[in-house]
Amino acid sequence: MLAARALNDERRISGVWGAAPGDNRVSMIQVEHLTKRYGPTVAVSDVSFEVQKGEVLGFLGPNGAGKTTTMRVITGYLPPTEGKVTVAGFDVVENPIEAKRRTGYLPETPPVYPDMTVREYLGFVARIKAVPRAEVKKRVEETCEKSAVTEVRDRQIGKLSKGYRQRVGLAQALIHNPEVLVLDEPTAGLDPKQIIETRELIKNLAGQHTVVLSTHILPEASKTCQRVVVINHGQVVAVGTPDDLTRRLQGYETVLVTVEGPAAEIIDKLQRLEGVNLVEPRDASGPRVTIELHAERGHDVRPEAARAVVESGWKLFEIKTSGLSLEEIFLQLTTKDLGEQAVN
Ligand SMILES: Nc1ncnc2c1ncn2[C@@H]1O[C@H](COP(=O)(O)OP(=O)(O)O)[C@@H](O)[C@H]1O
Ligand SMILES: [Mg+2]
Image (cartoon, rainbow, N blue to C red; front, side, top):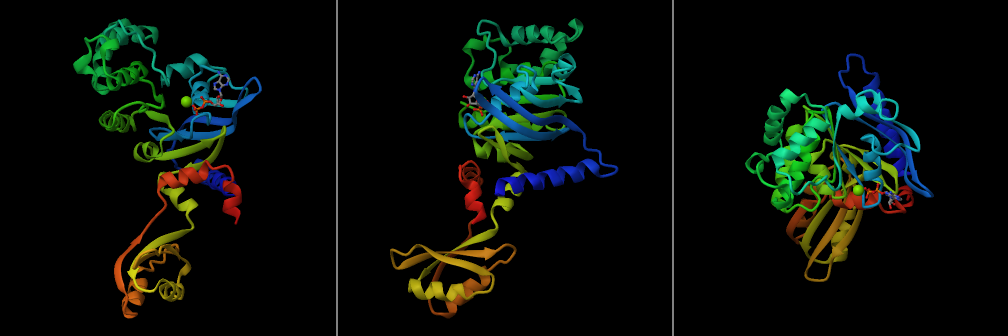
């Protein structure tokens, strides 16, 4: 099973990391065999992953996958049914105060106090989160800067755009300067410009903070995160960098060749090239045919394919590699019969 293989790879990798002498990686969040049931509903089932200090980890999965549930357990808002979660070494069940002190949480629906100004609200949150009184003012100013809400700090939250409100949500998560930030779908519902701004903000937080953000949108994860945990139906189906995931799932490289000439003959010719495993017409309806080659990984067949076409007197219009997009991989991962497909 591909999913199982992906997980084993990951375990091996993290095993190596964990064991390496002189390794200065520090695991800031550890989720171990987490299961969460709501009555008969199993929302999260035996989920394990780690987040290293300073890392931005994407928690990616379709709606209903179990992202919010996992985040609520990490942030201490829901107890696990089984398993264990630690934040900065503190068990979220046994040591909730220490764990929460080190955690900032932006829930799916940020807490709203529409009548308060941004500054009043952040001051209020700072006091709840035990920021020393003498420091509150300064901390509010700093956090406004960090979250890019300084220009609206005296406006009522209820009158702000969704983008600003979301950043106020980020500011309340940051106010006590936590080591760990848990952001549940931080770009959901924002317009494209606001999405780009929010991504930049989050990237700037990496390093100083350890960030876990959830998203059901793949480009979000690949653009903002160094590593991605893919979850589906409450289970982890893959872990890796966006590039790892692409490579792991795609055992070959796809090359598309567009030629004017007799389709059958062209296919026959390309089939004979070294390193080519499969040749199929993609579009052979007009005088130009587009043919898909699957080449062994690391074997760039484009020069040979181009020569074969030109030497046969056919007209070559285009030759290009076509990797699977992350979007396609995500779909593969979250399609139910992935296991069967992968075995074949
Ligand atoms: N309070 C709840 N009571 C019962 N079922 C719930 C509750 N919250 C979530 N669920 C169920 O748990 C599963 C995971 O939900 P959730 O963690 O919100 O997923 P995601 O955030 O990935 O969309 C879903 O099937 C959802 O219907
Ligand atoms: Mg959710």
